Image (cartoon, rainbow, N blue to C red; front, side, top):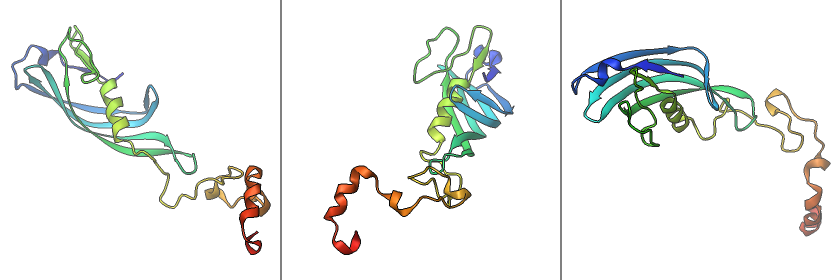
Length: 168
């Protein structure tokens, strides 16, 4: 959980502001593994809650979509969201609220922004060669030893008859 104390802002006048420095080492939020989380968040008391703004820098452990090796993907989370006051319901639009003792767990908000900012198809490097479609070997670690005969799936062998003689 990523908790911050917002008790001073709950009863403050609109416009009051507080800055919190976030500096966390490796942790997990449900299905995401963060290597670190660093940055500053500014919390401003507004009429209908507390506005959270700021940028957080992190690296999230993902798998390369080409070769399936784990890679730490750098991500910047630019947050801007309203935190509800104590007693208010959590909604999909506002997943965070201040508890009765003045603390707010930012975990749902951080997780949501992380998923939105992660690339759809992360890769370990631009020149990643991926895996062999036949044997599954990581081609970045060396060429596979699959023979040319293994190239065609036996279920597709009948299509070979449609090719001209010189291409068979």
